[in-house]
Image (cartoon, rainbow, N blue to C red; front, top):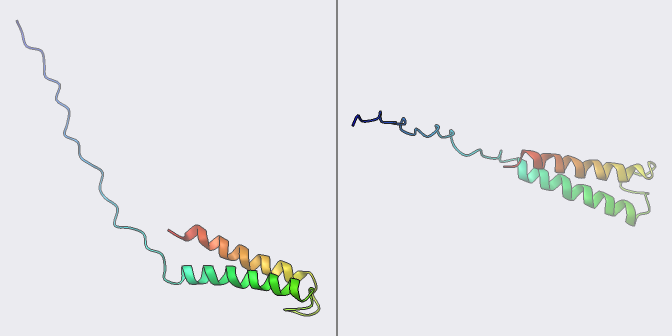
Length: 81
């Protein structure tokens, strides 16, 4: 009886490894946390001082400044690995 052809698959070669783990810049986490904490403190001061401070004369825009600081901190979290 004739033998059938063997079906040899090529040997598995794993894909090359990446160059290494991606490392955060050293400034990222401190700046991110500082922006979030300063933004929160800005909003708390605005509420406690009835929109007169931290910058007198702009009223409720002090809240917007606080929220922008917090959003800037959260936007940095997208770069965190």
